[in-house]
Length: 240
Image (cartoon, rainbow, N blue to C red):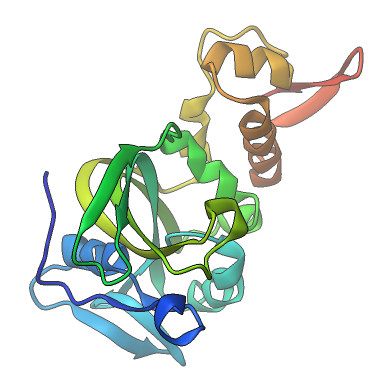
């Protein structure tokens, strides 16, 4: 599904304008709300003292583009009385678009070499693994393609050599994956892997970075779906 919506208002105040980067809501977040919203749903509704992205009857949808720690307490409180769907967009492909200071001209556009997949949910799950078993919480990963708009104002990150991230725009939704229970996350453990296995065994089998795999096994242990059964040399052994 291609979803470039030029009518969605960008409410990002860039540091190029006022010296303070204030991201109230990027185009990406606004577009994802439009993607998940259904007729009759309430948007930006207050529930139990919190502003909720989408409210469908007693079902709450929260879209978090990064940093689950920032909504940890919010989720802990909401799931006690409401069904909550936590949506995490995973960026499969990102085109970096360089614009002039005014944003009136595209200087160049390139595809980032970094590509993520549904498994990258574990990058954020390490902050809330204790919540995954709660019967009122479901998690959904949304695999997307985006454009990251950058403008050079001299006040951006030194790593970006003065280029400031002005906005992020949704280009395409590639697919979704939903998890209702901790056991749904076990689908990322290959069925033909020899048990017990180490993080290195799993990384080799999945062809994923060892750093991500360590987060994966940590989360699964905290969820109670994986257990540590010993060591092989300096490496821990895991089983179900």
